[in-house]
Image (tube, rainbow, N blue to C red):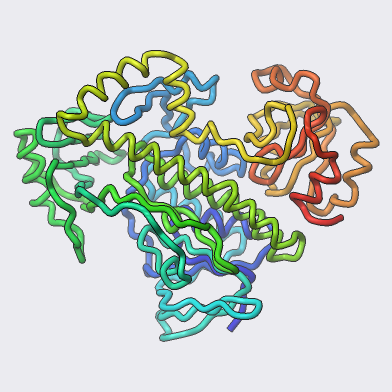
Length: 489
């Protein structure tokens, strides 16, 4: 049976974001999810500044109501002032992953994606012009066929194994407990507290819930078929802190390790991976879910254009080229944070040195940009313009009839040619791509982003918000850039 251009396996934040982006690009999408209903668990909490920008770009932030934001972050437990990121340091605090999944699913369904719950993928076969997926669902076994398949099915990805992706790295060396509990009052330890026997972390969540993380040094990882009992978590907590939390009411309990792995390629033929299916790591700094959402934003518009015949398959090469280095940096910084946060007394000199270094604004700014995604710059071709390859910052604009902004103009998921100089000849050259790229004449209004555009007459912005071409400053001319990112005219 074939009823989709793309099959997406996994209905977490990565899978939902990808499915929505594919629908914005006009592709037919079916999402296959093993669980019959959302788990309600919230491994991820909040959004990094880059994810906040992405959600705002698609008009989604309002769905989350009043979001508490903060400029306080950390690197390996060492506090960092994220406001050093030139006004881009606001990150969302304590938005449970369960809420993120619910809001993203609502958006995805509104856009017309088909979500099939209770369908477990058993096997994957690629052949000819498509991919076959054997699954077991509520109505029994079935086989679906589609031209493209994307595994967004987490760290234990079935798609990754079935499609033969290499997944090198290091196995877990320790086990950590995570529990959301009620009925207990604990002093906040938002960035973690290093103790003689390990590390504990405490943070308040909405609804009177407290999140705790416990890592007892020297505890080897166990292969578990089910989550640990809360009594095991409480015992470890008491051994480390001397406090008893045995009376607390567990909302849910889980465990994780510090395994670090990344696939060697994000695409094998007609099968691609995104999120934890492509990279696993210590969840330091809440980067995992956010990186998965950003993977999906990078891939969605590209695969959508290819799946609907508007761009050649070669466009998909840029997905691996752009996101694999981001994943490598993610693994590097989480391993470094793990040493600082979870290491024993032998790491204390390193903590002290880092503690001195992060007092320098330049160092703190560098680390904040690394863990928030603000440092990302893709190779979009040669040129000297400072925004080339970077994500377009929010820019207030005055159009012919009303005020708008780059954030609003990107909500459709289409490309954007921004004419800042009223250049009719430039606009005429973009006419052959009018079905894929919106052309807007506007004047920048005062603000930080406007200052960075001094002398800029035009910008070509990809659907994911990254600047693909600028005038003056790009080595390519406009038609070359349009063809590279949006296909032939």
